Length: 408
Image (tube, rainbow, N blue to C red; front, side):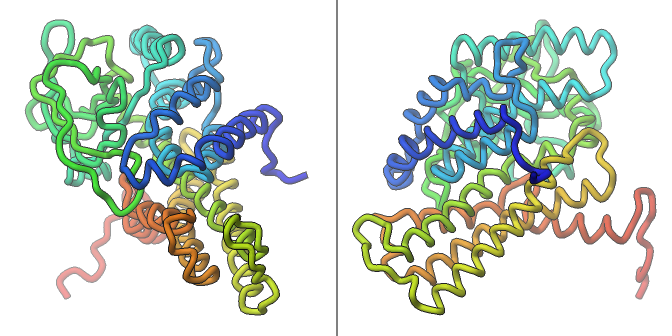
């Protein structure tokens, strides 16, 4: 038996995602992409199937999925609609981070009680009200990569905070009920340790959605700009107690790998389409092309690349945990880089192999290609940042200073 075979519970969850994706999400994907419109119908289906409560702990009436279970479900969703899977990541992680991940972190008794009280409110909104949470990161600077404090700030006031700032590439902008905003507490000389994680109601006074969204790929994410102007955020809107997000970012690095499953699903979709196309199983393209040796070689190359990528993906999500060893952390960077780059390579090879008709928008491959190209650009772990960290951390241990070559 494969060491990476899903558990019975995981298999059930993936089967739910597969049914929704095949029957409902895939037929709608082209329209959402063409219109750059948010997949509200897909989210209604996710609510009905209770997948919006996927990562809410069972004691709060959720499905209680852990990190690996989330990744398997997300990959299956990405196989049928990349934009739905990518936005679902933002929502699901709001519960995953505050639930299973937060339970692994060090908190005082008072912090633990505070967190328990606050997250119960957010979980109730998800489970009972069907609320959708977003997770805007990017601001156009180094903050989303963890290299500087966030420019969006929260000033302490009676009963909560006053939030001001701006987020760009904010997926679910105008579609979410709450925005899980990462921001910096407004104090003299703030540091990364002063990061706050606050749930801001979409209809709160001072919240605005601005700008157009006409992107190369992932068009149905509708990732417009969010502007916060002196928005009052009550204290109970904390998704984590002050200082705990910074601890999570240091001790649970796999929390930033949650975008990758979407692209693992897209890689599978590109392979599936190519095999069906060459076998003459695509409606409207009945000609079989599998007899040509060049097509057979291309299919073999795609299979090898897909299986190499999947093996690294499955190993990485299986060993994700708090305080991972150095090889496990480096493997997470390698998995992110490999999935994002190989997925686009698979889509490129699929188009070349299938030929001219694969470029038509009546078929999904050109959308998969465009969506796949976006993965390497996404913070907090872009392809370039992964290579930078791998290069540095394979050669140096924590605390070592690189003075070599200076003054030359």
